[in-house]
Image 1: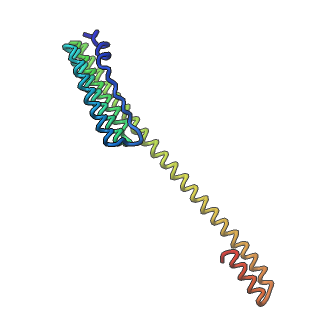
Image 2: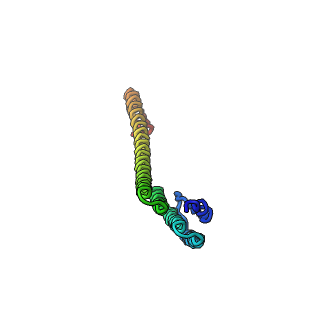
Image 3: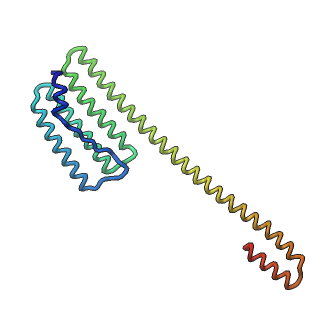
Length: 202
């Protein structure tokens, strides 16, 4: 039956690749894509009917897995989130596991048991890798946010420092102007002080 595997792959001809993006899709596009997934799955089932026994089971497992992954991808494209890539990776891992389980049925005894253990190990590893990627992505996002906040804070401090420096300069220059005005008397002194206060915003 193992000779059927290449034929199954060719017969399926099934590749749904709806990648999650930063922007969501319209409801009408979502409904159209959903119908396409169902239509493709129906075609895949019909092609699987060309096979018998475990070869048919493997074919159906692939068809169902592709449908499941396609639906998850579609949902995440419609409403993207920080976990979109993680959800898609997990869905793909679970779909691959179902196919691997069916392939193990071609064997018996210890060979089958080892096959099943390997399939389970591959599932656990794939899910673990997806979780690592999710954690890393969250850490990167948090780091970027902290860097952005630090830059904003630094910019604000620079602005405040410039303001303080400018105010200190005005105060110093106003003190000099007042000192000069004090050398005058009467109306001339008053006029000088008024002019200095207006100029330096006092």
